[in-house]
Image (tube, rainbow over the protein chains, first blue to last red):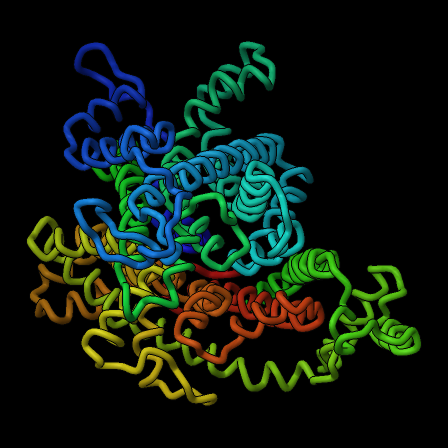
Length: 318
Length: 309
């Protein structure tokens, strides 16, 4: 999933956006809120538990890689270069002779950090822009929408490559944290229009609802209307998008690192490992397959989670 | 209709200029000296630098550079690279390959994606439906370079069905079957899922029930009544995707060594060939925007309920 824009198109064309968050089900005991309803639905889905379990595993792996391996991922012995999997090293050794299992485990951190930060930034920034555009309307709406159009018009991968080549050129010597932030920023810059549009369309759909008008008639200020009435009812589509986006960003981060303009050694990243293994594909495919398998599992669990959340939040799909 | 097209074209103008200017600014901020290494082991003579600086307007303010460049683009001249190669020529050789690649990818999406979507949408919750759901979920989670390498290893090295890399400069469609699939894999999953949802939604519609009730054969109900209405959102996705596929072909072209526009643009960025990067991006953005417009217009043709004023 190298292009979140495509993901957006599918979501937009699907059911989520057109359907603003539904009012709680009426009748039958104490009405649950939307989130309560969704939680009730989620608890009965095996997909949710499987995906949740994997996500938890990856989160623990990112936070405490020492729990999973006692080896040092940077300790390399050339004499064991490209040795196959054994009981000593489960995934074998990489080209430099470092333990591949340890490297893959330590690579989780970079992917998860970038993905969570970028998603958070995108949703925060895009959501804010969407609320402002949708709620204020008028020329502000046109202006924000046109700016979003401009950013949306930049092909995702191409834009990321250009930005990263400008601020993070190959061969530059920057700290790990700086590079991570540059990658995160570039992803936010290129993907905020999507969450802005989702937010804007659900705000537009909710803006003239009776309860908003009622709140306004009762004298609620714009901040209160947005915070107490609009936001809770517009959050669902963006929430769904953000879950799927985490998965997409993990894939994009790996792609950029693979191209050599994302994260860089000595940071451990699955994309870097795949790039290193590229030239040995014919003789030792395991070098490529193990990190790729982790990458795919991570993306898959977030996409599955997004799927489960979407089904739970969208009343039309029930 | 004519007025709608005109309005949309006018709306495209700020987006087009905004996007290209943004790229232009970013590309020409790429740090580094464009003359580094151009003159062999020694520094370039000042006269040469002065000549090229003047020729490429490097001494002018950025906005002037941009406008001069855009003027030339509209006259059909994308300029030359720093070592004098015509960018028109680069694009002319590379672009057809990328278009072919994107078309092959689109072909896979249509053949497999729509078929799988229709079949699973017609029998919801059947075996095939679940199979399609699970396999598309899996496809969605596969980044392009993983699909690329795994399939290249499997079909190229293990089974030997295809040559692992594309060697000819003018690629044929058969060579592109595998790369095209790799490029289109993610979108294929989206197409399948969208078709499925759309079909499942519409098969409960009144007009379908009417068609069944008046005794039309199932083939006609599905093929004419149901499919025509259900494919409208799919066509949108496919249309916008064609633009996105060309821009996203960088990774696929790299893996399979296809001499296309993605390869060119990547090389140009690493060599700080600003003019080439901007030119290719301009073309891609233009294609992308026009595809979106085309898709909107196609809407009216497919769905009589939509009329543009």
